[in-house]
Length: 117
Image (cartoon, rainbow, N blue to C red):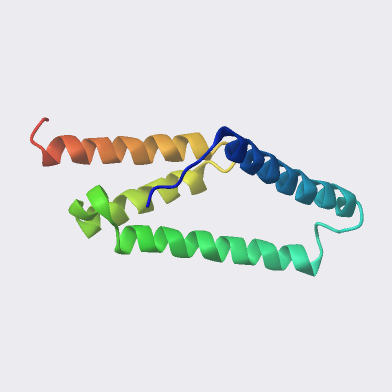
C-alpha cells in the first residue's frame, strides 16, 4: 500500500514540525537565564554527550558497516590515533587540521590499496 500524500498534508506536517521546534526553543530561551551552565545538570549532560560520542566513534571503528568494513582495523585505528594526536597538539585551532589529517590519511590508504600510487 503506497501512502497518498497531498500538498495540504505536507504543509501541515511542516507547520507542526516548525511549531514543535520553536516551542522548545522558546522554553529554552525562557529557562536559560535561570540555569547555571556550571551546575550539576549541565555537567551530567556534558558527560552523557561525551559518552555517546565516544561509544559511537568506537562502534564506527570496531564494527563498521558498508565501505569502511573493507579497511583493515589497524588502518582505521591508526588514522584515528594520528587524527587525535593532531587535535591534541594544536588546542587553539584543532578541528580543521584534524579533519585534513584524517582525510589525507584516508585518501592515501585508498590510493595505495587500489594500486593508484
